[in-house]
Length: 245
Length: 249
Image (cartoon, helix red, strand yellow):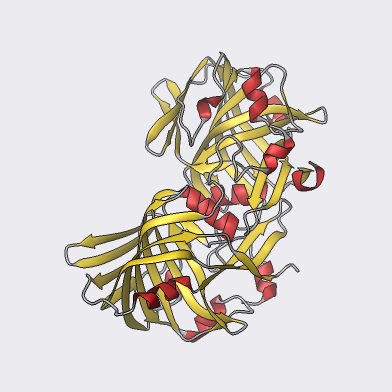
C-alpha cells in the first residue's frame, strides 16, 4: 500500500480497519440513568482540573445500543459526574464498560472515551428495567428501575439533557512511553430524537472491584431513574484543554 | 486530579488505567508459527510502503499463549506477521492480530500500534496435535495444526533466542478528535531478556476462512513451508519511530 493511501486509513489494521470514519448514527439507543448522591471529596478527587464539580449527584447509566453505524450491536455502562468548565455545565465521563471491541477501540482512540471491556446488560425483566455489569467474571454493578411509570411532559428537556457537553480525558501514550495526547475532549450529540422518556423510582448497588471501581463513588442516597429511547448522531469532538500545550 | 497527576497516568480511564507503564514481562509464552508462501501481488498490497515484503513471499501465521503477562494477565493471541525489509534491513511487520483480553488490545494499539482486534483464539495440545483455532464474532476463521514436538529445531534454544531479537514493526494509526490522523507512524521495537525453554519444528497444516472483519484468508496459502513451536520468557519494552507518514510521506 502506498504512503498516501496509508494516510487515508480510518484505523488499524490496514487490511480491515477496526472502525470507519464518523460521524456515527445510532438507532433505538436506550438508556437507563440512575442518579445518586455521592461523596463530594471523592468527586473532587476524580475530576481532572480545570473541571469543577457541579453538585454531588452523579449517575450510573446503562445503554443498550442495538444498531450503531460501523459498530454493530452492543451494550455499555457508564459513570458520570456533573461539572463545569469555564462556567459551562457539562458531564465528565469517569469510566465506561462495553462488550464490543470496535466501539471500544474507536471510543478510546478518537474521543478518549474511558472504555474497558466488561459485560453490561440492560433488559426488561418482568416489571423491572434491569441493568447489570460483570467485569472479569464478577458482578460489580446492578441497577433497577420501575418500568414506564410516568413520563415527563417536556421531551425537549430530555433532548437538551442528552445534548449537554460530555467531557472525556483522552490519554494516548507515545511509542517511548511518554504521553502523546493528554487532552480534555468535548463531545456534543447531534440530531437527537427522543422517542420516549420515563422517570421513576430506582435503586443502584455497586460492588468494590479494583479494575472496575464504580464503587469508588459510593451510593449515599438513591435519587431516582430516567429511561430514554432515542435516535442520535455521535459526531467528532473538540479539544477543550490540552495538558501538553 | 491535578495536571501533574494526569500526565503521570499510564492510560485511560484515570480512575482505573487499562494498562500500567512498561516494560512488560511475559513468562512461559508459547508460540506456534506456521510459515506459508502466498501471492506476491496481494502481499505487496498488504504491506505499507516504505516496507518491502520478503522476496520469498513468506507469511507467518501465529498462535501465542500468554499465561502470565505483567499488567495484562492471562490471554491468547493469533495473527499474521510478514517478513519485510526497511532500508534494506530485515524487519517483521505485524499485519493482523486477534486477542481475547482487552487491556493488551488497548495497550498494544495505543503504545505500539499493534493491529489488534477482539476475538477468541486458542492454542492447545489436543491428544497428539498442537492445535490453534481462531473464532471471530462467532465464526471459525482459522485452524492451524502441528505434529507435537516432532524434532528439536536446528540450533536449539540459543539460535531461537537470537532470532527473536530481530526488529519488529507496526503501522500505528491514532485519529485526532476531529477525525484527521493524529499519529500515523511505522514504529519498531525489539524484544529483550529472552530465554527460550524449548523449540521444535514439525510438519504443519493451516486452514484460513474468508471473513470481512478478520480477513486472515486475504493472503491465500499457496504452499506450507513448515511449523515451529517454542516456549520462552521475554520482555516487551517501549519502541521507536521508524517512519512518520505525517512528516515524511
